[in-house]
Image (cartoon, rainbow, N blue to C red; front, top):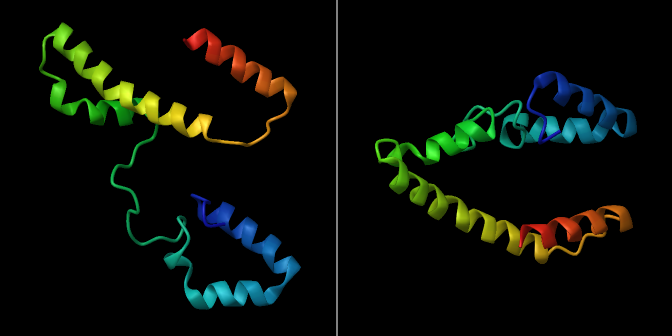
Length: 114
């Protein structure tokens, strides 16, 4: 429920919880939906609202828009490189078992990426 972006989706999940135990719904209502739910939030809880990854990257490249092509490409490389290092570090430190099929796919893609 906390991650539901629409009121309709939130209400659907709340109805499912209410089927299990009505006291939970009452408790959460008393706390205030706006305090923990994205759908009922009264403030923007993120610094950048985007609809897709392209908009996010476009916002990150705002400072470099006027650069010539080669400095722009270097700027992009320096911007995205640390993201990839961070994501790789997080992935390597993850011990979630995805199953043999997906673990094999990930290892194959890791080898190809090097």
